[in-house]
Length: 115
Length: 112
Image (cartoon, rainbow over all chains, first blue to last red; front, top):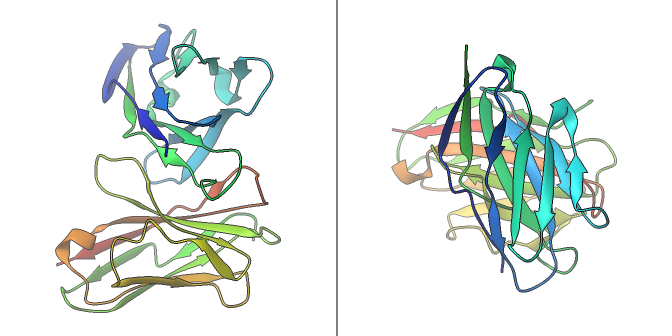
């Protein structure tokens, strides 16, 4: 079984400042890792994913994340945020095969970008 | 359609009533998932279909919850004898096998 911990439930940040949203996971098998964004009254949208290969993954809207196996982390970063980045961000994990293909989500981090 | 479609978008019902929530996945997607998202929480897995069969229903909370996908496309989540604790947003997602999950906008269920 896998689990995901998002350490910060709320992150306020000023516009054009950098941001890091933290995510740690636990799993007894190798994993795939994802970040999803949920804008108000919209469905979840994939930001980026790590399946294999390079540990630095680039996604949409200028976001990137780094897979750190030794620290079991997959933190999300953006060097300069915009007001439009205000949303709920979810880290998720899945197993590559077997019955655990469904995603296990963290509890989310609300990013609020302040003018 | 272009994306995953869920109906109704909002459903208000009384405790004890029966509810059906419908999901129309992206055409050609073989896998379909139901999740439940309570206020302030991340989505919680309920059930996963591969084709017509439920490949994993370990997330269904109890026997009041049931889901079907009779023709391998549209799926219906059925909740019997609804309780106030069932109030949540029910999310549907579809994917090609092992592929990215595409989510619908959800059906918000409120049980009074």
